[in-house]
Length: 530
Image 1 (cartoon, rainbow, N blue to C red):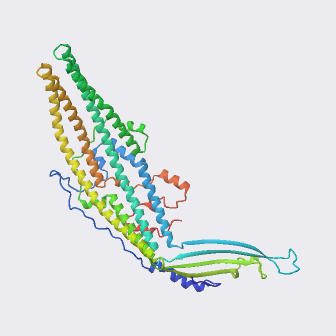
Image 2: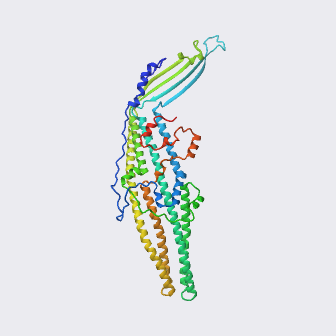
Image 3: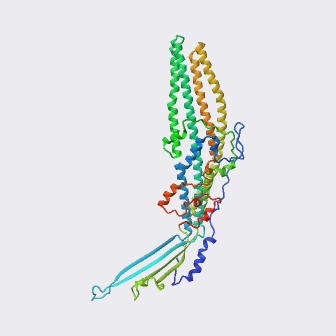
């Protein structure tokens, strides 16, 4: 390191001014990021010749079910879900880490130091007299700083990487919101479906109890054998046995809903009310085109930001291959009581000291190691590109699967409605023939079994239609728009964090909201909030 010392800073003003402009005039090594190319189909494949058409632009898709209870549950989940709040706090963490990365553009090492030394200097004499030693006192106070000039863009690339991480955290929050709204709706539909299946089972229990009564009357009058009674009793018991399993499944779904709403299980039944029907899917559904997924699905945007972060990290690794130019300096005051001086002279201008100078570090012996670090980062960047392309493909798969499930569930409902009508008529006719003695009880038994199976399948299929539609909306990336205009972290959580830590202005929504221009936060963060 080259060091010059002087009693004046003026002669170094030009040197400092020139070196301080290097971050502005220097280059940034490494590739600049651009969104990777990804395969997207021109349109979705119709299922049975059916394909919902139009533009997919329904940010609050759950309102299409016209179910006030579902609307209320979604609202509660948005306000109370702990996983979503955790994702929101992670946005604050990423924002603080971005501000910390920006701080690397300023002197990386700064320190204020002070020292006091009291030494004893003995006189070398055969007639040395104790107490005649000389006490030398030295006092110093100074400020030192070291600044690595970001000539190759190492720190600016690191800021780009952290900015992408920050933007990715916002996308992760939006993805969590998509998952939350979808999960709440699917669990609510499952609850209503199970309630319908329980109602179906209870209705069949009541019908089979009447069949048992008729079989008993027939047996007591001597018209049939006890076999008919036992068969009727067996079928009744089998149907009754389905109820505990259905009730257990219903409780499981309610407990899962409680977690999503951030509530205890005892709060769920009052929210659901005494009863309700399975939500009806709206008549019109729009899916748009596959390219819409690139701007609508938060997980696709998150994968893009992960690739952007890795691209910037590759630039950081490449910058390590080049010489590092640093500027170090100290300024302070020194005083001593020796040579007629006094410790009180510490703050006199004549006691000040200055040292300033550049240093240059060139990687030589570890160049191979740094080169392999670049290769590792390049491989990581390529993996992130492949991951982005894979996420885009999976997004199209999920939409296509949901379209097929939605269309085919509707087909199943239509068939099962007709089957249910036939099953009801079969039970009536079988019972008439049995009472008239035209057939044995086996005919009634088979008809009742078929009716229970058909009605249970119909209830399940009626739940699959809205469930598939919810999955379709989630696959299209709908739901995260509910957070627009709202902060990602509730006020009570920010208040608790502010009590523990000085967050400066970072807790304000403007400081951690997603910018319209994704590069805006980099420029904004060049003035870190201390």
